[in-house]
Length: 143
Image (cartoon, rainbow, N blue to C red; front, side):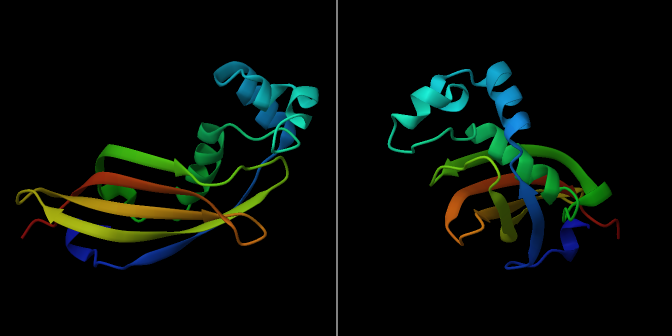
């Protein structure tokens, strides 16, 4: 979608992403190897009571699903930034769904603009577990 076609408040629903325990453990061992993500006995002693998914793995699992319904498509020129807030823990077998909303549009020049999208993610119980704000540089239509 071209920058010119965006409107503030546009939304898209994100298909569910299920957190697979084996993928969670593999990711954690390679990229976030701390006991809270990899040691079940240790995790039982924490306030969470069991292993929690690494935050980046959680985000990337949802991001992969977002890309299936991505606003930008072929008109995306580049990603600019992403800010992630983890609000509640995510566990193995959680099913995460969400919504992406266009929250800011800034035309940079005649060739492109900056689109900000907020992605709110919820678990199967309706609890918000994460929010991400991402900015992307998107092509403008040629007039």
